[in-house]
Length: 305
Length: 305
Image (cartoon, rainbow over all chains, first blue to last red; front, side, top):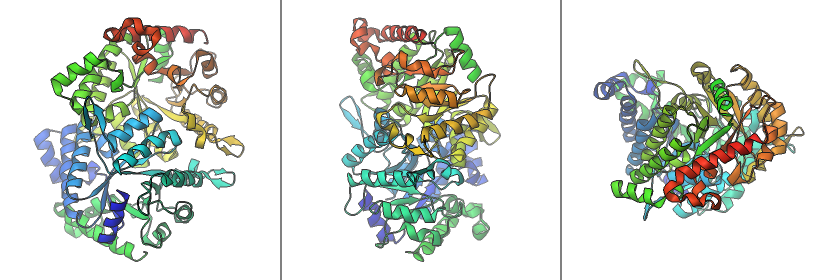
């Protein structure tokens, strides 16, 4: 799957992932109203609103970008109906040829991580049947529990040719609280990065590993160091746009082959119509605004690769 | 909710939580068969099997223990039907007077953590309605992203009088890979523990904080130190029984008031019928075996408090 991701990045000349984090406040009023009229102001109604919203966004960007990254929390907050729309979104995106990165940040000990790995990337055995549940192409994983928590994902990745992105240095302001603490003179995130490279060596695609890393755009100096520590790792970069990262910040995340990083933008694209820059589209044409924002982001990134 | 948890621990004289981690292999053959006959060897069939299994276990232990801890991964692996049974299990347990600790180990940055907090512990706004989604009483949370990831949970805990357990030192063999690394001469888990105590000071119940910690039974020496660092923190202790922790290991986790810790056992109770010790019950009476195992665990813990 990492090979397919790189192939699509090259074909589209766009190392861009659109974050499908549909907060209700991003869904235009008229679309919310319609969903509530059908299903009431219920969890089902909210889930329907974000599903209709997602479809428009996906249709608008699916020929421009290689991948989408639904943030499961935005679906999970609407309970079971929300999770049903998370799954429907995954299937819809895959049907449109998009690679799906489930931003689930799961991570637990052995048998529990195995259940997550199987449920999100693999197949679960039910009687004589081997069934897929959520079936993303990649998921994000939290490393705090160490190798025990990661190995079950590696096994499933090997078997299914899928991938993970392990949190190394996150984009948020307080990410340094633990991640930046010095251990034998080097920050924790570097130790995690080294471990990611080691895990990745076990599950290699043709040039890059099935094991990627998450490194926020908001810390370019650290990104530079981590690029060197993890040369064969694809870096998923959140924090561009809304969180303050600029294209100039992103140069160190790429390798000389122009690959090695895929940059996420969520609200900067899906809620573009709410920005002054794209306000002329209006809430009715939020899909067109998203398309324009994606085109602008792709152009912006071309300046640094 | 922490006050209610402590009250129930005192009433029942049982600082015990039953982990509802129903792997399919724990569900007796006859029960699996029945579910597959009804719904096929499908995700729905698997979910039905674990739901029927859970009901028997919950009925068997609900008057003995204050709390249960469903491990969401074991439901999530069966996709949307699995999540529906996760929710049904929460509701069923609450109906039986049990406190529900959702073992979800979620954690993300600001607005995303807020969505998790709202979806699991709080209320989500849909139009004019304020709705609960999963509605556990507590959830487990991963600290790797720092305060940004925790604060949204604190806000919801304050509002809803609910609680969280933050991973500090997990029970698995490789937990030390990052958690034990020394920072200014002290292991990372101690720094996390100090932060947990600080977060907890903001959200106090009558004697203990709404913010608890997860510290594995498999590391009693570390538990002793963490007990001192987090005096008002309720420690959720996994790793008893199946993972190797014994009652003697647990003494340091309790305060002098006999409170301050709640010990989890999952397969040791729910799959007791598979142990030689409880084999006489047979697969048909797996609920009775679970009840006996819970009684034995409660008696075992009385020797150390």
